Structures are given as structure tokens and as C-alpha cells.
Length: 491
Ligand code: SF4
Image 1 (cartoon, protein in one colour):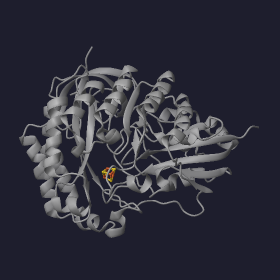
Image 2: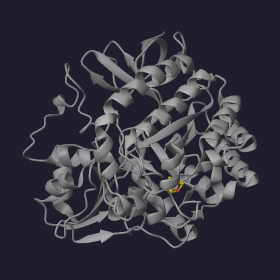
Image 3: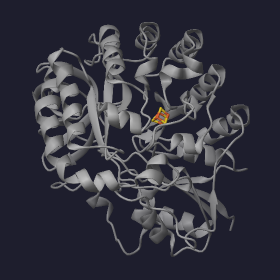
Image 4: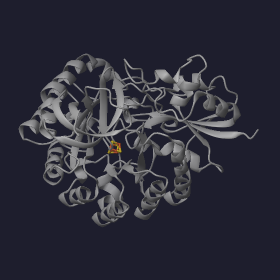
């Protein structure tokens, strides 16, 4: 019997980089690319499915009443095939690491405790890799970082590289695991690593993990081309601290990258992180021109309170954020053929930072209200409770002191933002009657199907009937909920 190398993707979410389905992150690909032969790719869903004690029947993945099992639907093979694979494995690499925990519509990442338990019956060599190795992991905002116990794994492996030229062959080789995934995935693409600032934000793990480096455009385009030959159609330039800072914000190099990628004709080409300081008219025009519509430039504002911004060394002022939003609205705010504005800003707010008071929440609310009053368009407002990860300044200086002090205030404040800002903003961005094209049905809950377009931060649309999953529909928007829409299928 030949022995196998196996990778288990427990999914990753970091300040720079997303690998929770429907996204395929970089970590399992790079880990695979370093092995001499192609490993078997499994997901945490596969491990749950193969757990003898759980006795899960395939018929219960999507029960006719109740909710689709999002902890299982991203499995790659049958329970029996997974068990056979695990029995034949001599070395297993578990990829773990949620460092910017969010809410995931159609996946449930694995915790460290869960993966340790699910792997415990097997005798192979267990290796832990991914963001967890630097700083830990935590699925719940405001929780303590989970770190590996001394006996849980035989090895903690940093998948580190000195230079992108060394990494490039592994990137191309590791792309092959895409063929082992039956569901459609958006491929996360790395354009750079590390932080552009000499001293990073207090809470962020990116400067702890990486020094600043940019990847050249030719290599990125070659990787996307490789994925397209394997059948991938959707990409997100999400693995970098700020896409507007690509190659120090050099407009010529940003243009070269985007033009080269757009020329390949992917169905979806979106971006993530954007530092408001780097958003200029010239750069914004390039992104609006070459990205496919419906993309979001997510800005890690974190706090509009200048005291908190100073204490945590945040990257922008309130004025800079407003200027960046106005630029993106002028250039990317127009509607497009898929029903979404071309390119909108997103705002990230982080609760529990050093120096936070009740007044901080008031200042955050006032800034969001001003955006509404000015008639600006914001695609989404993401509010998270910080996780103080070991190695960060926040962890060293205050840990969860402000989270504990202010947690009592958060629930009511978030409700107020959802009711008074988000709802009105959604009505503005997606007015009733808007037609969204190619919206994919992802999960059921009772008699409702939740659908999203393929891309970064697509809006969730609830359709009041059970549509077949994994199919594409054109939807007419009928109403607005706090963070999602309701819609009906049009012929
Ligand atoms: S600017 Fe702040 S959030 Fe962005 S990568 Fe640097 S340290 Fe992290």
C-alpha cells in the first residue's frame, strides 16, 4: 500500500488573505506546492464527515426543513473515501488560522480543539501550518487566541519563503489541488506581503508574520493563467495589506498588473484591502476600469476616534477616510451590467482597541451617520470585536482590558448601526426593483434560499422558496433587511 501525504484545509481568515469557502486560500496551495508529489486535499468538512462517532448520513446535509449543514457542505469526497485516505496517510498537514473572525454564510472553519480531536484516532505524523503558527486562531471575535498544545502536533511548520522568485514554482505546482475540489471556489491571489508602514497597527498580525515584499505582475498573471487552465473563473486580489499600495502605489505597475489579468478574461476579478491614504483618483480609475463589477475596496478604518487611532497607531484619519470614500463613489459608484455598482468602499470597525470608551462608539456612529447624510455609498460596514493575538502590541499592552470593560455597550450600539445606517445604506445601494444577475444559491434555511453573487463581499439575497443549490439566478430585489436583501427569481 502506497503511503500518502494529505493536507486538511480547516480554512483561514487573516488581515491580509481569506481562505474560507467559497474562497480557496493560499496556504493549502503553497503547502502542497512544497511537497514532491501532489498530496490529497481534504477539508475540515471531510474530517467531520469521516468521524465514526458522528454517523452522518449524506441525506442530512441539506434537510428539507431546517438549515443546510454548512459544517459539511464543503466536503470533497465520501466518508468512506476520507477514512481510507486517512488510513493510508503517513504525514498530514493541517492548515488552521482564523485571525480576523467573521460570519461565514456557507462554511464553518475548524477550531484547533476540533481538528486535534478529529485527528486523534490516526497514527500518522501530524504537522500544523497556516496563520495559527504565528499568533494562534480564534473563531469568535472578542475571544482568546487558541494556541497549539505541546503534544497536539509533531511539528509546527512555518511555510515561509525568502523571496517570491523562490515561492513562484510552489505557487504554480500547488494550484493543482484546485482539481480535487468539487465545489466552485474563488481563488485568493497573493500580490504582496507585510505592511507598508514602518510600525503597524496595534492589533494586526501581518507585520508580525511578514516583511514587506511585492510580487511582480508577470508572476501573478502566470499563476492566474495556470488556475484558468484548471477551470477557475473567479479571482480575488486579496492577499496583501493594501492593493492600492501595490509596488508602492506605482500607477504604471498597478496598470500593468490589472490590464494583464483582465486580458485573461476571468468571469470575476475583485480586490480586497485598501488603505484610504493610498486611494487617489488615478489609482481608483484603474481599478474601476479593469476589475469586474461589484467589487469592494475594504478599508480598515477600525476607529474614527482620534485618541484610539493614536494609541493603536491606526493608518488613517477621519478626513482621509471621507476623501477616499468620495473618490471611490465618484469613480466606482455607477451601476453596472450585473446590477451592482462598479467599485464601492467598505468600512471595517474594530471594537475593543486600546483607549476605547463609550465616546469612541459615539464618534464611530457620528462618522457613519455623516456618510449617510452626505449621500455617500458604502457597500458594507463590518464590525468586529478584536482578538488580541500573541505577538501584537495590543496583546502586550492591554490584552482584552477594553473588550471586557466595554463589551456591555457593544450589542446595543451594533443594533443601532444596523437599524439606522446599514438599512438605509442598503436601500440606497440596491434600491427595490434592482436586478442582480447571476446570483448563486448557497444554502437553505427552512423554506428560504440564501444566494450571493460570486465575488468579494457580495450582498446576501434571501429568496422565499427552496431553489436548487449551486445554481445561478437573476433576482429582482423586493425588500431590505438589516444586512441583506429579499428577492424573487425573474425569468
Ligand atoms: S496598515 Fe495596519 S492593518 Fe494594514 S497590514 Fe499594516 S498593520 Fe495591518
